[in-house]
Image (tube, rainbow, N blue to C red; front, side, top):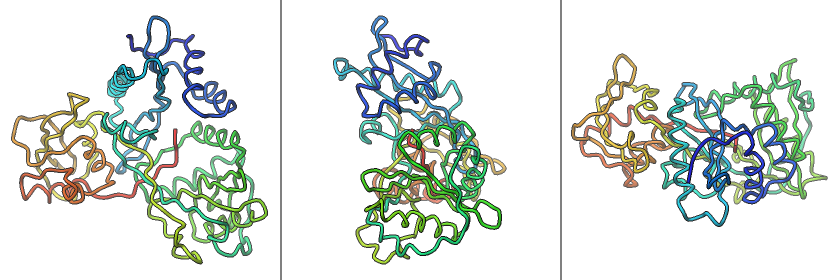
Length: 385
């Protein structure tokens, strides 16, 4: 078994493996391998010249606790059936984490096919959506659209990005989109037969909606707004498709309160776990933290996959900057790397982790320090690859 970056001529093999393992349309697969695939971001397990297992590391930048952070979105992990159960995927994931560390990507994200599989490798749930699912009437009366509405086109990416950036300022862990990200997103929407509209108020873009309609169901991919009236306009626009749509599904931000204005919100919303996060390098990743008061804490991190993360770390606030170093002292708290990722993202609080037995606090004063370091946030990411 050999693990390495894919060669220029391996794309045919890797594409066939993708087609065998995933239920994607031919149009999407062709687009992905012509536009998103690169050999320098593809790792594979080889048996001679044959690909046994492969994955992609798609580069992104996410805003994590106010810092733009480089990351890789791990996608496309796939293995031919005759090689499954031999440890190929485990070895490939480990190699991928080493590559991320070399690239100075201190954290990683992915949308799993099974949460328990990736949890064994150090990832944990760090995002969820509030999913609305019901008939068109759940949004209330269609009413009149008060703003100007223009169809989404690639020439208007700058208008959507202004709305997106302003909307996302309230959240943590979101993708900082560049023009290529927007281009990919709109291509993916087109492949699935989707469309979108931008709301204009006083000659200013104040929101947009991207959606697709299939089998009389409308799936809202993104509903972004900078003014409350823009949200109302875009929701009315969706509701006005009543002649084409029987039901609506919308993956809203986790703090959304649209249900408070619905005619009858019972049975139309639920929490849906979404993207997982992982710390690739504890020492580097924790340096983005900004404690709300002076702290000095020693924590033991348990990481059975990455030896450089497995040990005791000294966390010290120096002039508002977190210094992190390895040490041999007795820890005041012990935490698995999976839970540490959730704390870093602000997805759970130290008190919640302790209550669930995911954080062992051995010094009564430590919990106060932990709470001042790992403050809660609201995480929202829309990208699924």
